[in-house]
Amino acid sequence: MAANPKYLRTHTGWLMVLTEGDDLFAELERLATSEQLTSASVSAFGFAGSVTFGFYDFGKKDYDPATFTDREMAGITGTLAWKDGKPSLHAHGVGGGKDFSVVGGHLLALTVGKGSLEVTLTVHPQRLERKEDPRIGANVLQLF
Image 1 (cartoon, one colour):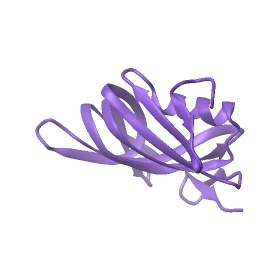
Image 2 (cartoon, one colour):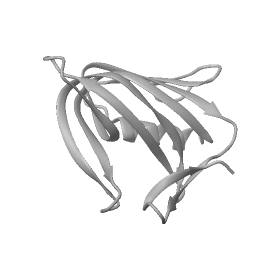
Image 3 (cartoon, one colour):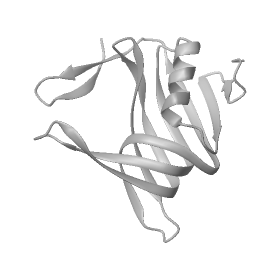
Image 4 (tube, helix red, strand yellow):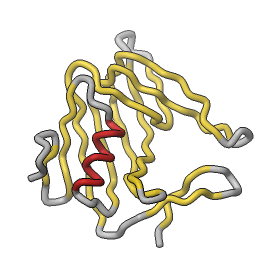
């Protein structure tokens, strides 16, 4: 078991339970670095106090961001790999509001709200890297 009680090793990888104020990206980076993860598929659900989604603008080669508060994340899915020696999360998500409006897109940031965020990592044996594809100006997962 990892030194951090937020993480629990499973037979396929890791289970994380994050609580109010936790930064999803920072916690995944901490786990990937401390446990020297090779790569993983990521899925999650729970509460976001603040979540920033981005929609990729291929003309600008950058994301158009939008931040939302108090969202119930119906689903987050993605991959954890490496870029330039650091963990790199690529994830998309969908979050609903109190009025049942739903927003989603590429996940740029997420801070856990009241409640929790449950994250499952299925670890892969290969160390996977991301590299920028100059044609689109975005990082792409490399399968070699």
